[in-house]
Image (cartoon, rainbow, N blue to C red):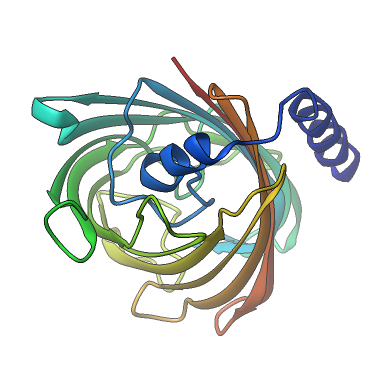
Length: 287
């Protein structure tokens, strides 16, 4: 699994090396609409149809019937801006494969878990609306609302299925200070999720309903140069046993005006799970 992660990262990094250094005009456009870090959403909407391909290699995740879940998830997201001045955008995100191994709590043995879906990432459709922009306000802000449901169940090596049903309501707000003349962009996001009618998923107990609140703050250094460093801090809770604190150093590499390659490593601690890590590689394409 580690070899797969390394290969994917190297391939994407080599592809990014074909890009050119940015000029000041390009930097201005990136500052306003692009160079999005891994977890914190831009408050400004996308300006073109955008596709994100994401690979997450995670460690030590807990769900209702399994713990110490190590594996990877792949997902795709499409973003379409619309309306006057593109003040609206619709996002569709679909996790398409998860694979890993864990300790089965009931079975009391090591088990394999895989399937054409995600863990806490459901297929979801989100509608976002810009509330303010820096043309008329101090900061950019936006809010969103969406609905999701699990795609495929996760199969296990003990003839049991995990995550074979579930729905969620998703909502959140984003804020950033993106301006043309800023080298450092600061931003923050709150992502709330209400999961219901779930099975084998609740990380704190055996209930079929639970909440997630994800808070993130990020800084992107958008000065001249080929590679743009970024840094984020994350806090995630289900208002129960799961309390996760993570730091995420990362690099963003723009490829001309059509793509970005970014990679980061989230590391930290969970009161319910101990040490947690996630290595993420994402390719962004704009059309």
